[in-house]
Amino acid sequence: MKYIYQKNAKLVGHIEEKILCLLNSKDDWIHDQYRESFIIHGTIYSSNMPFHPQSISVTGYFQDEETGKWIKVKNGVAILNSEDPSISWKMSFEDLVSIHFKTGKYIKLKHPINPNLKRIRNFN
Image 1 (tube, one colour):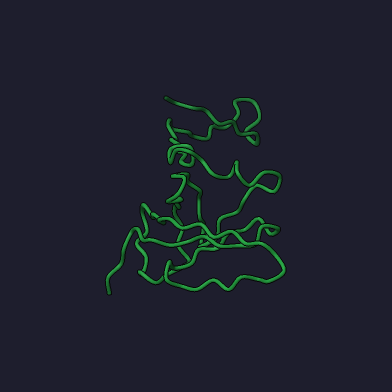
Image 2: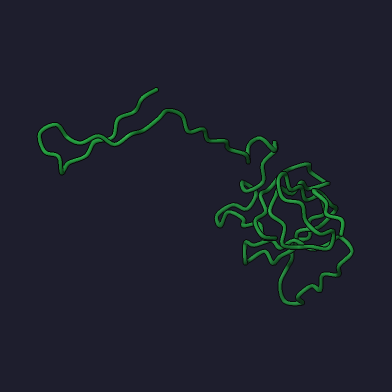
């Protein structure tokens, strides 16, 4: 079975719900007759977990093909900001990614006067 890291897809959802769900680009989206819907075509990218070409439960980053903006998708769902959905979309992919480094070595030491108390000391 062949797995991929990117594919053409679309995000769809109702405007009032502030949630967009990932669908395959060929899948039909039945519009609800009583409410307006978002339909955004683009590409979903997953950097570290390959997925089946027909999968819709992808975790990664979606780029809108019309505007070039990015949004984070987790398990096939993108959550929009409740006050202003447009601020959930970022102009740059780098605005969505954060990297954390843990440095130093931490050891637990007994308190010199009261051995029941412990303190943590950082050695860089």
